[in-house]
Length: 625
Image (cartoon, rainbow, N blue to C red; front, side, top):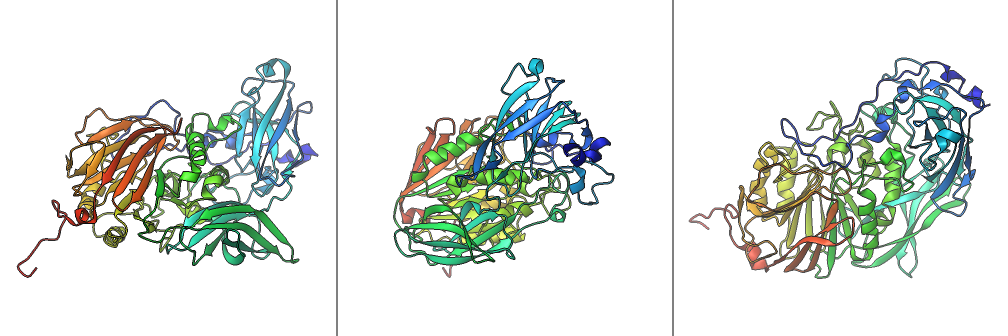
């Protein structure tokens, strides 16, 4: 039966070569020094699946158990895979495929696929056959353990010889599946367009013709209500380039979003995801809870976490992720450990590094579920979400692997007027955030520039004294570009620096560079305030922070020493802001390895200090005024 299923693989499998997805930093002649922590290439792109040939061996076998996963209601489970191979070699490897049938019979015609037959789907993860048994080459036997998450389809395991570059299909396992593959999973919260609205987005296998999605929710301990959800998805022809249009494609299921409105400030709510089937029965998720946003300007303890460039990793140690996003699990785990002391999270671009391998988005939403289901998980657009040739991105590379923003803007909700233009503002208590989209034009006179100025100008500093600017690429100051070691995107600084000064932005956060750096309060290349650990009184400049060490391979720093750089660290970490009240803010940089604080400062000031004039920071006076 197995031979019949894969009979069409007797021929050479032909597919367009998978584009190697290299992380790119900056543009033009700017470059970044990288530390030796991974090569920045999506591991799945290293598999030459387009060269795979049929070589099934009657004495080779792959067996997977248990057959049914998630029988106790979980959305992840461990699988044991037993391998027997009569001709073992060091570079034999086991691939996990989902859907289980990955033969050419399931391939759909595409302009990017010129010849048949071929394997048209990359695996979702892999391990080498000798991963847990050093004697595999002698015995031909090995037992591997994989952790699988519910991804709406069944699974099979395939044994390949020939390594990743010259794969030969030797054996295919039995099929295994989750008990309820269509279940609603991986909720992610987001602030709505008003302070008293929370949005819940989740993924399921149910189309609206099969089941009606909704959220059942209410204040903890009180009666519950139900709010309907909208349903979106995307298709293979929505992708802009390979591999998202070819071997990286995987059906994303359906993405649902519900809007929970008229929330009471700073109150605990419980919720669960539901689908009402056509036969009148219900499918439920487990229960979750969140704390609603404070009223804008409310004086209370408010804690914000900010980082970029995290990505994902596999807890089963799949070789696929060896040194690709080496710090992502540490960052995730530190946030989970401190979750009771976090109110909102900003992941400022380069979310999954799926780079066109769409299965990885499920993997990421599963990884961050404990965080994103509990506090608002706000994202910004990065080059690895948006950039694709001829897609309207400001940059013409293919860092997104053909995703061109479609997946990010569908999988996560942000309160933007147009989610294809990923810029928005959001309030949290005493904070006012302006989130820019560095992958679209931000120069003076552009649509986005006008939004940024309107967002900054709209901050009521009496109620929301802490004004924060966020973008993925460095639009301000960074020492990692070694062209002159003084900027990220020069046009960004030239166009935006006047706005930061005019509206007295406290801190500007950026990712893209995979390290940590903090500047003094700076304007036009000059420190405007003395001191490193405490700032008080009049705001004279904006503190710029690169916080791109969320988990991806690390970047070093350029050779030039800049006067405005106060602290540098090429390590994995994140920033935590704690507003105690309207006049006291604590900034902490924590490492993902241990959660300890390695850099910090405080700001103390009154409202009259915000109003005080600084250089280029006040409107010119006239005789009339």
